[in-house]
Image (cartoon, rainbow, N blue to C red):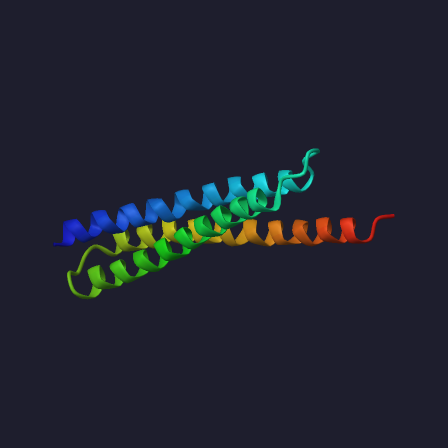
Length: 120
């Protein structure tokens, strides 16, 4: 049982970490869509935006799953603390990358909105 939960937790940590990079990529795509010479239609733009948000949710849910699984493994199955800390570290890195990129993206979103609203 401990081996199975460890593998599941490792997969969740990898998904959380990988989703952070997909989120980063979709943030870049949305930012490029703001300045694209033929402007994207609203439906295409919102599709990009919804996919970007889904990757952020995947990263966050993966993090929560890893934390819950490591708590079970530590308390019930007494799995090594090193494995638990490594899994939580990888999942935390994914969540932190997602949060950092979201802050940068939101700042650029406000700048782009202000530049189109108040053209000089």
